[in-house]
Length: 538
Image (cartoon, rainbow, N blue to C red; front, top):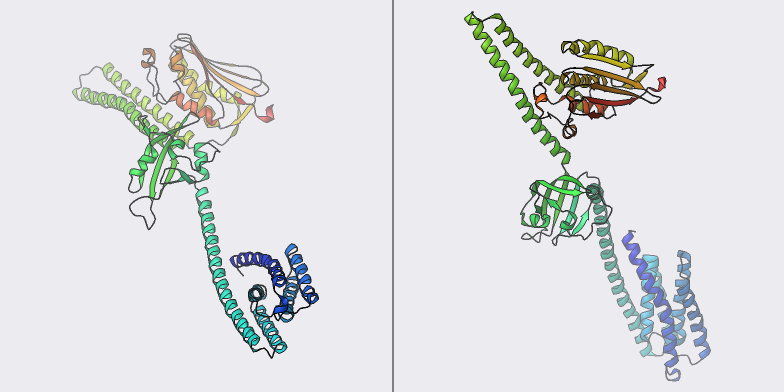
């Protein structure tokens, strides 16, 4: 038996529960108002009371305490047959209309509770009662005709009611099955939509939100229900020029799928770039106008930022490469020409080759910076190692002391006591210190560059100090930007890619630290960061 059939039968049983108490009450009232002496009814009121009082008591008990077990329902059903039969044989016969109605109800109840078997038992009981009534009144032909007509009427009405009941049960069961199937499909669709990373919103033809998924709340950073809210009140979109865009007007004008990736919204003071895909929903009965719309919102902030950074990167690198390549090409061409002529002074050739060599070194530094940046972006060589700081500082001194000496600068190491070790990427830490030291030597014309290393119980501090040209307050906020170079003429005199400090900033983040800057124009600069001491050396 399906869930639909059970539900239908439960409703019918509830109706019959009320009918079971109303029927004997109606028969009592009918018997009291009938002129007993003028009819075939039994004139003895004791017989009437003996039949009706127990029946009324039973009907009230059944109404107040409905049966929950099949055996109890079967006993109560048998009792009802007994009392209806007794009423027919001892009191009223088949004449009163309530008798026909009562037996039809018994027929229906028997069918509902016992199915085919209940129907057969009810019909057999009806036939037995009718035969007994005819036998008791064999001389009254009119009464016999009434009994036959009443029994036939009961069969016809009962058959019709059973047929109608079957049809209703089938329709109700089919309706419930359809609802269950629809609910299942809806549940599957909701599960599918809620597991999508993109925000999906269904709006009706008035622009109000009907359905949305969890990603919509995540995108809008809210826990407030969006149901029946107007779409333009929820999504305040703007285009790249800052002009407000009405989402509902935009999708109403679209005859098919419309995609826009130039929109943005403000969420908690943060600008989110959106790709909006809008599609009208049309039923098979409505081809001219939309019955609603589906919106798919995708956060493309990161993708757009990467795209813009890529375009900027290509543009700047192309520009930065063009100048040294042009100089190298021109210098080498002039050198070839001077060699062919054969009368060029040796010093001129050397200066020309030196200039070409300097530009090639510039290109080499740019390629090295780009390679370091690429490794950091892809997290290559970020496996942590245990690094002895004293050994690392000694290596850096041996590498950069000759470069400082060529510029007539002092490269000093300031460290004391036991430095211990740190656990991090050896390559990233070394390249970070190399970038800071190289930068300090480059922008210091006289004086010194000092690598200061000190430790406390928890961290090791690294500082690169110089006595160079210094950095203005306005430039300090920009020096870690990609390809940024100060407008200071002294900076422009020194060749550079504008990538060194950007790469250093990227490496520091990979190491889990931050570079701090202290600087004044013409008083030098200090770049510092710190790392936790390795646990074995605490």
